[in-house]
Every structure is written in structure tokens, then in C-alpha cells.
Length: 134
Image (cartoon, rainbow, N blue to C red; front, top):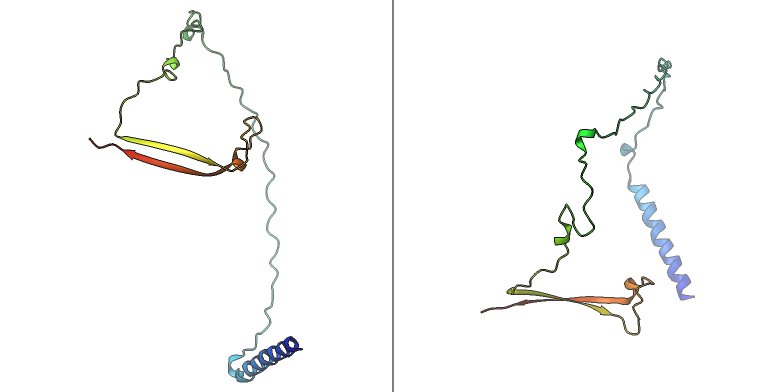
């Protein structure tokens, strides 16, 4: 019953506020809008027909004979780009700054590499920076 009285009081307050706003609005603020007459313009000239697309260009991808060397490709151990150096282990040097990172795993979750459940297993991450002074 009490909530029904509160709703009725709210409706009464809102309706009286709306009535007061309508009453206080003077007639000078209202303007009469005259209808706008639309004049139709004649249709524009039709567009000219679209030209046919040019035939596709045929590319000659053959390599001239003088640009190719007759040498056989290197054996599997040799690499002409030197990529074997890219993955060679490097000597570790002492640095004054060390970064230590750690992934925090959720309790009771086993990480299965073949299932790809990494996202659900990670709870957070920690990062530590260690600076050595002499």
C-alpha cells in the first residue's frame, strides 16, 4: 500500500511540473512554421556507357640465361645466407641488469601443451629487475 502511495505521489509531482512548464511558456516563444514548397528539377542527362576494361597484361617471368649461374646449390651443411649463425648459442656475458619473469598458474590446473589451454591456466605474472652494483 505504501509503495502504491509513493508511485501516485511521484506521478502527481511530475504531472504538476509538466503543467507548470506548459503554463509558464509564453506565446511569443512559439513560431508558426510555414510549409515549404518543393520544386522538382528535371532529370539530369544520362551517364555515358562505361568503356570495356583493358585486357590483362601478360607478364614474362622468365629469367635470362646469363643471370643464372650454372653452379649447383650448396650442400645441406653450407648456407649461402649464413643462417647457421643466427641460431648458434652465444657466449653469456655478465650484465649489471637481470630481468626475471614468472607466470603464476591457477591452482589445480594442469598445463597440456597439445590442448592449448594456456589462457585459462594463467592467473597472473610477476616481473623482477635485479641491478648489480660493484
